Image 1 (cartoon, rainbow, N blue to C red):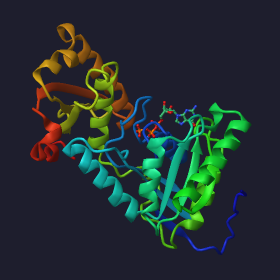
Image 2: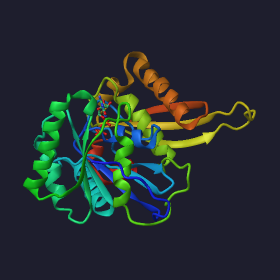
Image 3: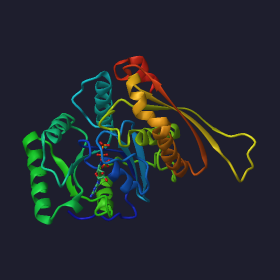
Image 4: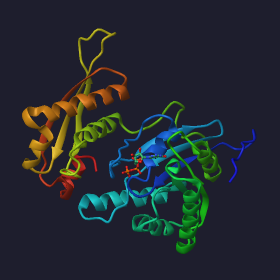
Length: 313
Ligand SMILES: Nc1nc2c(ncn2[C@@H]2O[C@H](COP(=O)(O)OP(=O)(O)OP(=O)(O)O)[C@@H](O)[C@H]2O)c(=O)[nH]1
């Protein structure tokens, strides 16, 4: 594998790239490493990426728009089916698919399930990305690269490339970009330079709150929390040098019994969720924030199409 250099008269290329892989494969972290700034929500627990988050890589010769989809799962609820539809639609529309497989874990049924789906999408070029290489020695890495090659042969997938990367320390991440660029169609930049993500701010703010609300209670409330930002408005009558943004958000849970878990004794947990997520929101938006959080029950929201639409799915 060699890095490709860009000759001055090469045409400009641009397109959409989507990282797929089972939960925890390192997709969001890789997106952030390529873009160079935190845009997607990462966590050490599976299934935090619900919304399509795009990061944009600007290069003189190319622009990569990274589409970070939710994971593909065996659907059990209406929400699960919707998410899988979103994933498949995204795969068929992008220009390059990067299939992430962590170096520190043997290829398992979860990876194969996704690989089989990928094999059905014939036209889109696929790059196999072996992630988290910092966690293994070179012998184990070599084994994994061979296993990935074999997986492709078994399922009839022709990998455009097989690339080992580590998002920690940004090892080979720029090489990955080098290898993706020639696979993109010729075309002008799709977004103005400086745009890192076109994810609406409210959705990102909602994700930050959801992330904080799930912290420490994931086992009790695995998929039962949704967050909607109802309003974000600059506070009136503030001096120009001391702005304040009012953010009103609702944390939805599925059952009244979950309320206590989210709010905690004497509201202590909710307060904690508020102050933690407020710090992240302030960092994201670059302005002081007043965060107003409410907890509401939306009964069985995962099974109800109307509620799902309201919650942005
Ligand atoms: N050591 C190491 N850890 C990594 C690397 N990339 C990701 N991780 C860790 O692996 C975990 C999962 O990473 P994510 O980027 O959230 O994985 P994901 O595939 O987006 O996960 P979902 O959103 O659940 O689908 C996090 O704890 C990361 O810090 C890497 O290159 N090296």
